[in-house]
Image (cartoon, rainbow over all chains, first blue to last red; front, top):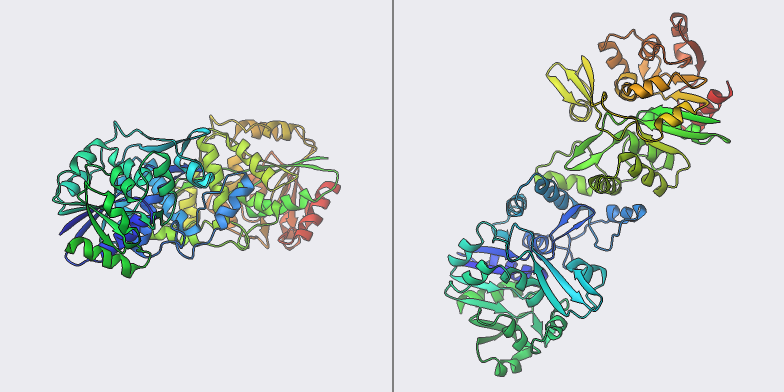
Amino acid sequence: MKIVELSGGVGGARLARGLAALERTELTVIVNVGDDAENHGLYVSPDLDTVIYTLAGVEGPLGWGRSGDTFECNSELARFGLDNTFRLGDRDLALKLFRTYRLAASTPLSQVTESIVTSFDLGTAVIPATDDLLRTTIRIEDGWVSFQEYFVNRGHRDEVLELRFEGAKPARPAPGVLEAITGADRVVIGPSNPPLSIWPILALEEVRDAIREPPSVDAISPLVGGRAVKGPADRVMASLGLPPGNAGVARAYQGLIDRLFIDRSDTSDAERLHDVEVVVSDIMIQEPDAARRLAHELVAS
Amino acid sequence: MKIVELSGGVGGARLARGLAALERTELTVIVNVGDDAENHGLYVSPDLDTVIYTLAGVEGPLGWGRSGDTFECNSELARFGLDNTFRLGDRDLALKLFRTYRLAASTPLSQVTESIVTSFDLGTAVIPATDDLLRTTIRIEDGWVSFQEYFVNRGHRDEVLELRFEGAKPARPAPGVLEAITGADRVVIGPSNPPLSIWPILALEEVRDAIREPPSVDAISPLVGGRAVKGPADRVMASLGLPPGNAGVARAYQGLIDRLFIDRSDTSDAERLHDVEVVVSDIMIQEPDAARRLAHELVAS
């Protein structure tokens, strides 16, 4: 069975870990690049790295970077007046250096990602949604800011008033993205922040169109007990005018998904979800075992 | 008293530490950039960094990098197939990132160096010989190679048959270099490798001309007991056809220096040095105390 997952960072990465553990399945993870940025000249791709590190089993405890990493370089950056709020671990830096170096030699991001995936000996295809420039920008009360400014520097405390996916119109899906989607038996949208992590992927018109092709498109809700498991998804959805709870998630993916997996704690949401088949399950997948169980349920049902 | 030192890496840096400790003196260190290179996209300037780290008292035990540094990033580079023979420490990386980032924004190397000197709160001016591209290339039996290839990758075991300083002809001295030299009361050539570390500076015609201006130009021999204290200076001088011992050092600086400081262990060399005043002294200056003593002797005599 061929499975495609659309993924943001932590939640999507955890689901990918579960899907990758399934037998007799071929997994392709298509990853958001709207959060990509340059930090001190280094190309940083937070969601790609979280997915790769999680699949490799070396992910950091807080959803970014690597487990047991040190921060000698990052601390020292302050000496030179560089903002080191975005914490770059020493081992993590090697990946960033490699990617930046290869991109500077005009290697497309998808090819660099493929090399990295090979370096970690992952059996899963991980593809950036696009090799072109696509950046999520966010209007807060103070004006338009980059994703990093909103999320890292300002700690995602501001109300998100509007989103733009700069560059999405001319951007083309990276090689392999459309082929994977149209050839998939299942497409799964990971439990990521719908507006901030998945919309940037869906902002690619060709991806949006292709999503209607596969036999079945499922989404995993990022909400448990009505709140985001991690990050500001619930607040962002509310401030963008989406309905509360899983009705908001369903609205975010309106016309695109066949089924929505919601958590048992949100069973009452099911009554208000008319346009989509609701599957009530356990969607807390911090633990690899839980992720495997959910992945199994996804493909078995 | 205004002192200018021309410096390569370790030996020159140690002398600079001694000169910087002198009272009522204003020191400018003009540093070789012929060894500069890009490693995985990072701009590496080995001699500048050794001088700065030594003046800051944070130099590594082997003459490169920082004391007590870790190598998490460097180890991890191998995963991505990057050659990590040139060992980049994690804390050292912060300086490299800062410099690369600023250079990419078209800041001249001398200005970036000034920022770094300020960051370490050094009271000494440290200036790259030039902001322009000047690269030492070395002919060995296998052909022409870069300095890093000869020195780091091949462990300076090859015989040096010929040197070229690519870019030296059009290159201009960095801002402040000529002013410092012509305004100096003393110019001192540090105990660096004459062909590999000092010739690239002297390859700048304007520097070479300016060196004739100051009241006195001294050189410190890099030899003790006829051998280089560190590195391949004796072998390189021999293979380039210079006479053995301090006669070779004097020949390397012919017409440019007034005095040559040689080590007590090489007193017998003095007989063969006719064109230059010889000062026999203790020129082993690994220890800061010894460097201060030699610096004091330099300015007092």
